[in-house]
Length: 465
Image 1: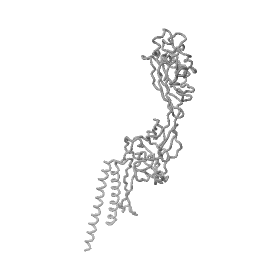
Image 2: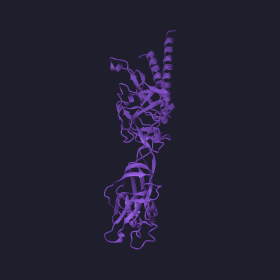
Image 3: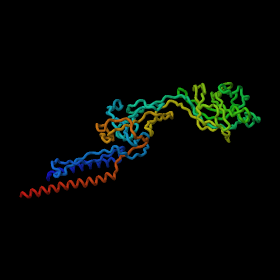
Image 4: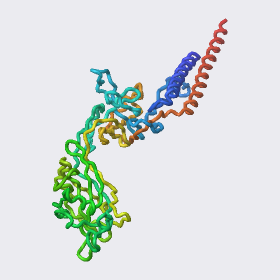
């Protein structure tokens, strides 16, 4: 290897260090870029051929990029509900719009991949990240939450409408007082059911305590209100989405305080007609005797649900309703106020609604909030992974394309999605500045080699004078 070879080697060194400097500068410039993956530099020596090992000399150098795609960036919280980050392995599937047709984006069908999760909803209802890539996923059944297929598509949420759902079940939990405090109990004769806070059938036109067929007409409202306690209220919905307010009251129809052969028994009533007059039915017995043991636990019915048949309130038909009472949810314990303590009264119906906003939860589910107050699962964000992740081809905007060395995308990933979060750049500024110092010194050293080689050539030319 001669002087001129040394010059060529130094030039290769300058080129390699310039390549490293370009990567360092790019990494530092993107230190705050969401989801950015730094690019390192690896150097490879180029050894000239030699038939004699003892005559082997050091050769030139070339530089290659070294991807750090698999290195996790710092995850931080975000105030944007549609932002998300991946912790661990995985990529979001995305597409780039090739143009617009009638103000609607058109796509080429080519899927790219990214970890940049700063997605926000645009005017067309698409989730688009800061680099203009459109998020892909699969739609889910709004009722079951199960995916509708397994092939990701560009997601769009615009003018989503959820039809009304009629109430079919009411969840109920309460504690009934051992001795209810009613207006009639204070003036009742000692030893009577009324004195025990209960309801006396003799005070009514017909016995309302007949479970399954008992009713209270408007003429008996005063007696009913005086001999029963409030059981709460809930707004239900019919099949058209019309809200129907159901008022509930409890009446104690038997009491263990009356002696042998008696047990603590209650009946539940719902208001069928708030405007009832005369002999019109105002309240209807739900059709079940609720009996409690001495320890306050519910002994009958044994099941967790009863059916209230043909419920009609104010002329609005709700059909058959299931009253669901979880184990231990309905009790009879002493209450100083003598009133029912309502712990839960909810139902599963709702009116029709229009989509108002979307958010992404920690399971990668896109949840829509509708005008009727319902939060409904709309789509599942899918993740993909690669066998050769660091061989992906980097594109503008933090996107990657599959290559022969990376292998095709594989559905699913071991990583998890965090909603309202963002993954930052994985660049370490201190490390990059250290590399910058080394690169600068190496570059200067290569220029010194060129200066030295030039001086040696001049000395050689002076010999000829």
